[in-house]
Structures are given as structure tokens and as C-alpha cells.
Image 1 (tube, rainbow, N blue to C red):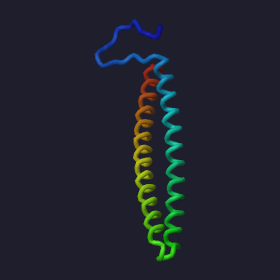
Image 2 (image 1 turned 90 degrees about the horizontal axis):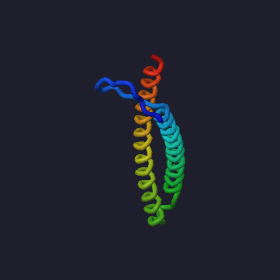
Image 3 (image 1 turned 90 degrees about the vertical axis):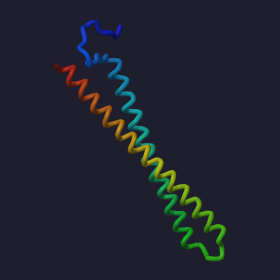
Image 4 (image 1 turned 180 degrees about the vertical axis):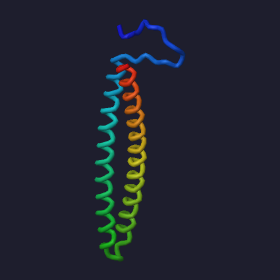
Length: 110
């Protein structure tokens, strides 16, 4: 149904409308994931800042609470870094998808 019967040159790709729709669906999912991760980074950063403020205002006598808050801040920082790495990966994938989409549009218009 979506196959092509025209002759292909080596290295040439035939892209169907269904495949371009799939690429667009993937691009939309990547955009949603990027938004979700960005929002999660903001929330995690706010919690980390809250714990840092609480830690600095905590009395010196409560060492256990201070250590616990520091452990939470360290873990939150690791989560934030991981999310930021995922965001970068998504942005790279989005750029690749945009490039493929542009190329397909150019090929289809000629």
C-alpha cells in the first residue's frame, strides 16, 4: 500500500507519508518529554534551594537533621544533572528530526 515501484539510485531513500507522520508523532513526544524534564528540573531546584535554606537556618545542635538535608541536596543535584543530560539528548534528537523533516520536504517539493 505504501510502497514505491520507482527505481532507486544507491543511497537514495524513498520515504512514505506514513513514515513522515511517524516522525512527527515522535517529535511531538520528544517535545513533551523535554517540557516535562524541564519542569522537573525547576521543581527539583526549588526543593534543593528550600533544603539549603532550611539547612543554613538549622541550629548547630541538630547535626543529624543537617546531615539528612545535605544528603537530600546531593541526591537532588544528581537528579537535576541526569535530567539536564536527558534534555540535551532530546534536543539533539529534535534537531535531527527537524533536519530529516526539512530534507523530506525538500525532496517532496522537487
